[in-house]
Amino acid sequence: MIYRGSICALPLVAALLATPSAAQVVDFGKYPDLKGQWLRPPGSPNNWLRLAGLPPLTPEYRQIWEDIQADLKAGGPGNWPSTFCIPAGMPAMMSFYDPAEIIVTPETTYILISHNDDSYRRIYTDGRVWPAEAAPTFAGYSIGKWIDEDGDGKFDVLEVETRFLKLPRSYDISGVPFHSDGQAIITSGSISTRPTTTRSMTRSP
Image (cartoon, rainbow, N blue to C red; front, side):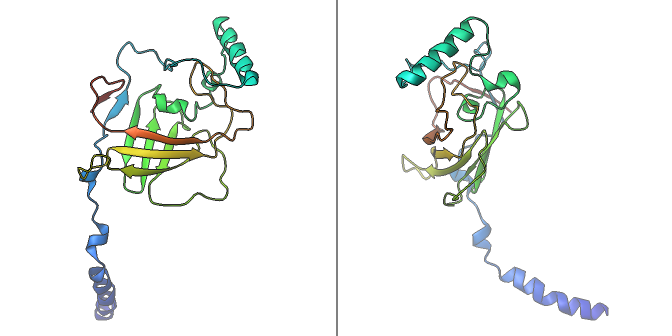
């Protein structure tokens, strides 16, 4: 019986050895090094990214936004879901209001935020197409593509599109509202990995 087991194992070993090893090799040097914990510098305002100007809203939604501003000034929660322990969702979660980690693999990039169980985002980079339907979530369903813009053989931009977003959500703590139908799409949101002269985030090992 021992010999028979050994003979049966030989075809399996031969099949494994015949598998092309090149298909399993990944050049991680092409991907940016985003390891570590990313957080805002000391003294940075939490949950806040200053608006560049008035948001381009229709008259109906401008009135909603002005009411939100009045509520904030009066000490109310405004339109910030996290006040009620609801995940901030997209795109507010990308302001990294709490420490975050970015895990890059060829098939998926994960963004994990140390806030609650729902503060994570999967960005699929495996070439998949959009599903016909998907359950809406606060982080949405994201498909991305790595791009080498300067031709140096290394990826420096991740272009992402996010769909199937769930309400309630806000852009940031300023309270800019989304449309009430919840069908917002965040398109071509680029995560640039190029070094800059000023960093809005710091990284710890």
